Each structure stands twice: as structure tokens, then as C-alpha cells.
Amino acid sequence: MECPVQNRENADLLLNYCARRLDPETAAVLERHMEHCAACRAFGAAQRAVWEALEAWEAMPVSEEFDRRLYARIGQQERRGFWVGLVRPWWPLNLRPALSLAAASVVVVVALLVQSPQSAPGPSEVEVVEAEQVERALADLEMLRQVNLIPNAELPGVQAM
Amino acid sequence: MVAVTALEPDAELMLRVKDGDAASFALLLERHRIPVIHFLYRMVQNQAVAEELAQEVFLRIYRARLSYEPTARFTTWLFRIAMHLALNCLRDGRMERGQERLDFATEETAARQVPDRRPTVEQDLVYEVRLAEVRRAIEMLPAKQRAAVLMHKYQEMEYSQIARVLGCSGSAVKSLLFRAYETLRARLAHLA
Image 1 (spheres, helix red, strand yellow):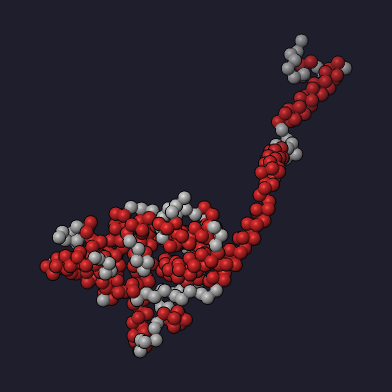
Image 2 (image 1 turned 90 degrees about the horizontal axis):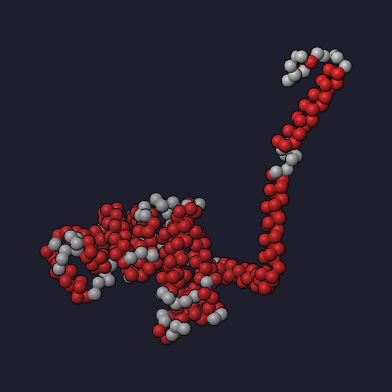
């Protein structure tokens, strides 16, 4: 047989041999090979040591409360399932569109709040205020010019005659 | 419709659970409670967390009963759920809360784990040291290698079933086990 240590494809033969899971015929062939193969003997001895070490690791006893806690959780789920079952027939008719509508309304309200003039004045309002002030200032200047309180040259944008 | 007579006993029981038979669920729980908890305990190395995860495993089995189809062995499905929960738990580091010390077991665990037949204190200590080494060696394996070794060693699963639980090929399982045992031989061979 091809040496299991040399050929990794056959390595599981040695693992299964050490786990005593090899059929008797294959085990006999492997034992004959191991008589002449030091590498396989060393592999087998080390693997058996691992196997025995793992066997020493006993698991802990299971809590006596395990089943009671599990059935309590199942009962809790069943009760929740009962109420969900009662509500479910109405869900597609009324609740789902109502929830969608409510979600859409929330989005619209939030969007309006974000763009609210109270939070930050819009540029158009500032521009309107400034235009009014400029017009009023110009009108005042024109009135002063007409009563000759200031010469033409001092009017902004008006050249002296 | 799957022929029930051709099914393994666990799958038959699960089909009865699907039809509302609570006694069949109790039987499945009775059969698989201990292997699942022991597998989870060796995966996360914390008994309380292992039992909590096992509760989740059986709860999921129960919740999924109505959609159950016997397309694979029941234990493959069961351990697939258990393994995923264990991997998530290891990833989240949940088992570190209240972790039992790995170097020396507590008095309580020692009392439960050490059989009375061992006569001397020295032998007790040797046993504890060996056990701590085994646990540490398993703990240091990558999670998938650890799961593969535990299923192979303690659940006595075939490579093909381990492959289905892990969701990989049979040759990938061979490779996982080869590397895992190689590491364990390096760490534990001196215990012989």
C-alpha cells in the first residue's frame, strides 16, 4: 500500500485506524505496512496519545433545569405566536398601509423642519430686505438733492454736471 | 411527499413534531440534549454559555418545525445550527464572561470531573494538568478545525456528515482534520 504519511490523501487511514474506525481488512493491510514503516509507526503512536488525551476530557453534567427552561421559552414563544396570529389577519388590510403612510408623513415633516426659515433665514429673504434698504436710502438721497442739501456729485453713481 | 418508512428515526420524529406531536419533540430533546450541550461546551469551554446556546438550538428546531423537510440527516441539521451559534459566540467573545480558568479547574468542577476511583492527590493533580493542557490545545485551534475535531472525536461523525455540517467538501474536511490533529500531536503527544 502507498504510505499514508507520504501521501496525504491516505492520511485519514491512519487517523481512522487510531480511532478504531477502520474496517478489519484495511486495518490489517495498514498494520502490515506499519511493521516496516517507522514514519507511520511514529505517526500512529502520537495520534493514539492525542486520542487518549481527548478521551480524558469529560464533559460537565447538564443542568437539571435545562428542559424546564427550554419549555418555558417555547411556551413564551407560543403565546407570542398566538397574539401575532390574532393580529395577522388585519395586518395587510389596515395596519400596513397606515404604517407606510405614517412613515411617509414623518419623512415629510422632518424634511420641512430641516428647511424651516426659523432655523436659518433663506437667502431670498435677506436679498429682499437689502433691496428695500437700498431703495429707501436712494429715495432719501434724492429727496435731499431736490432740496439742495447735498450736491449732485455726492450722489453715488451720479456724475457732476 | 417523502416516504416516512425510508426515513431515519429522528426525521420521522421531526415530521411528527411538524404535525403537532409534542411528545416527539420531547423524545428528540431526550436523545440529543447531551451530545449538543457537550459539543457546545467543548467549543466554547463554558458550561453556562453552552447550555444557553443549546437552548437556542432546540428553540430554533422547534420554531422551524412547520417548514421542516427531511432533506438531510436530522443530526446534520441539528449540529449545523449548533456549530453556527458556537462560531458566532466565539466571534463575539461571549464565553469570556465568567470563563472558567483553563489552567486549573475550580473546586466544584474538579469534584464533578474527577472520578472517585483515583486514589491520590498527586494523581488528581496530574489529571488536572493533563486536562488543562487538552482544553488549551483545543481552544487554540481555529474554530472550524476545532468543530471538525469535536464532531469527529466525540460525535463520531463520518467525514461526509462533518462536511455537510461545515458546508464544505469531504476533501476540505480531511484537510481540516489532518491539520488540526497535526497541531494536537505537536501539543499533546508528550502526554502519552
